[in-house]
Amino acid sequence: MNEDSPKPEPPQPVPEKKDNDKTLQKFNSPFFIWPAAVALAVLLYFGLSLLADALTRESTDDAFIAGHIVSIAPRIDGQVSAVHVLDNQMVRSNDPLVDIDPSDYSITVAQKKSAAESQDANVKTVLAADELMRKKVATAEASARKAQADADASAADAKLAAMNFDRAKTLLADKTVSQQEFDAAQAADNSAQADLISSQQNTAEENSKVDEAHSQLAAAEAEVGLAKAQWEESQTNVASAQLNLSYTKILAPCDGHVTRKQVEGGDYLQAGQQIMSIVPAEIWVVANFKESQLRKMQPGQSVLVAIDALGGRKFRAHVDSVQAGSGAAFSLLPPENATGNFVKVIQRVPVKILFDEPLPADHTIGPGLSVTPSVQVSKFNVPDYITAIVAIILAFAATVVFRFILNRRTNGG
Image (cartoon, rainbow, N blue to C red):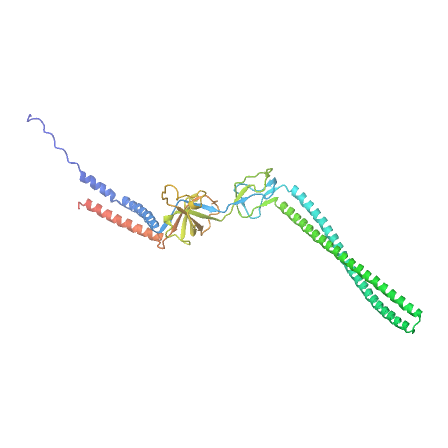
């Protein structure tokens, strides 16, 4: 190699230490440290909250709003003359919902009332006849008593006449009375005996008239019973017709929102045909928890319910009851684990949860909406402000340690 040729310059060292120092100074700047500390505190707050919830709460997203659903159906057949409500309309108890043409039922009421008036007149007639028969029985019994008294008097007269005739026989044998006097006593005896027989026959006749009057009275009383039964039936028919007439106006049975309206004016409805439903304001939550989550769950425990329809807004509630059996056990086709191959599946058990605070009136919350309940199963509960303080302390400590490490590296420690 030629000695006069230029020698290559050695490579210049890269100022790595200065670049590192600048980077460390950027990380140590207040414009980085404090926002990072705040972000770390927020992350720690949510992390600690999740940890506390995991240790003290049980939650599930398999939960829905439930409530009573009242089905509305007509009790009679008829053509719809008016519909007073719209879908999703709020109604109060006894508000009119649907009117059915009442013409046929009004005519039926008039017919039943006419029949009832006829039966009322019939009852009065039968009662009058019954009263007449009672008077007839009383008259017959009085006549029978008079005939018996006459028979008793005739018997006394016949006895006296017989004694006088016997005495006349004795006196005639002793020649004490004349033949004429004997004949008179005999004639008196015969006449008295004849009167006795006549009075006895009259008594028997009057007694038979009493029996006949009693029989007629019994028949009249039977007629009264039949007439009263027919009158009561006519009154029942009137009440039934009036009831059917009242059914032409379908009223709301409770407060709530109208849903699934399936009726319009002019439709012909059959009795029992569902035309709409009313959802009352009273609602609750049915949460299907895993059976492994029920170990510490009891009625009365506090719950926070996040409603998806309100953007996850939480409401206070409490556990009302736990169903005595899994949901699968009450399904249409319950599992038959005794047959075939068995695969253990964690069962879910419905838990009823009631709200402790009113829901927003400006939002419609109805059955079927998704919610996420969180049940506090442990009495140990960390307040949110304690969690925030711990998160701030940990974030501050982490920031101090981080700055200490940066300072040591910057100073070459």
